[in-house]
Each structure stands twice: as structure tokens, then as C-alpha cells.
Length: 87
Image (cartoon, rainbow, N blue to C red):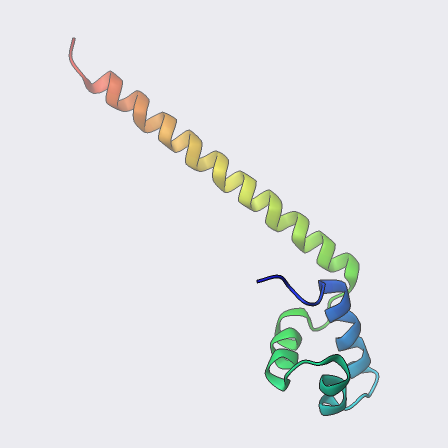
């Protein structure tokens, strides 16, 4: 399912809330449920767009590093298996 709102849009909605807009009114205006608003608030509260970009970059790097570790572990296991066989 495609996301309806970008992270930047979500942060803008939360900024409106911090500026004093009522939650119910914001939810109606943006077509979201109260539960969605509070999920967004729990995840993105206090973040700026630049913080979000840094977070996404770190998550991407973390994913890449985990894949590298998995590949190297597999290579290591294969080499150990080959070396353990007697010729």
C-alpha cells in the first residue's frame, strides 16, 4: 500500500498541532484518524525535516552494513566447510 503522506507532510501536520491547532480539527482537515495522528506523533514528534533525512540515511546505511555482514558470514562459513574436509 502506498503512503498517502510523505514524512515531510507528516512533520508539517505535527508542527500545526504544536502551534496550537486542535487535534480533532487537524484530523478532519487532513483526512486522518485520531489514531493515525497519535502514531505519527509518537514516531515523528520533535523532528525536523533535516533530522528525518539523517535518520533515513542512517537506516539505509545500517541495512547495507547488515547485508555486508550476512554476506561475509556466509563466505566465512563456506570457507570453514571447505577447509574442514579432509583430502
